[in-house]
Image 1 (cartoon, rainbow, N blue to C red):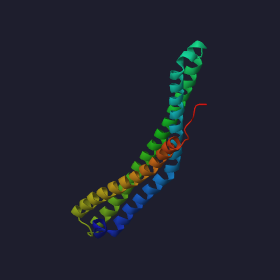
Image 2 (image 1 turned 180 degrees about the horizontal axis):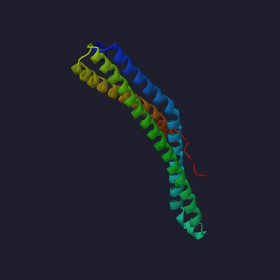
Image 3 (image 1 turned 135 degrees about the vertical axis):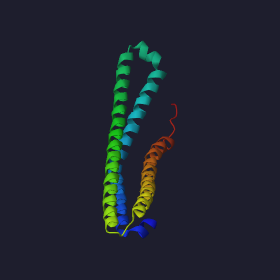
Image 4 (image 1 turned 120 degrees about the horizontal axis):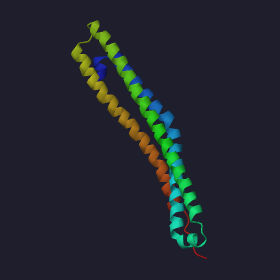
Amino acid sequence: AMMLAYSPQLTVVSLAGLALYALLRWAVFRALREATAEQIIHAARQQTHMIETASGIQSVRLFGKGDVRRAGWLNMLADQFNAELRIQRLTGSQDTLRSLLNGLERVVVVWLAARLVLAQEFTAGMLFAYMAYQLQFSTRVAALVDKLAELSMLQLHGERVADIVLQETEHDA
């Protein structure tokens, strides 16, 4: 409300920047969700392989399959690392675009505010006050958007836990 009281024109620029950030998060979300799901699957396979090898270590040694099991585990570990790398690349790209968007927004706001100062519709103090309000507002709204995305991502982990919990119990024959 304070930003709007200072300048509706600058407020529109700030809101447009935040809307673009929300669209960016939405656009990247599906790819990030798929990459996270892939990483969870690869981690589960790798850990399962390790546990099965450890529990059957006598049989593995008896039949001389230690190198085969180790190679299989290393391949699964590499798949997990590659999936984690994909998540990091997506997150890094998203952060870079966010920084670029914030920078562009700030440049446009300062440019428009400086024009208002030169036209004597704004004072230098009003400019600094507006920038403080704008920074606080955009930081909090961006954090809200991030938390909503994280909350949606938690659903993926909940689905994996549900798969495990709702699986029928195996009975020995």
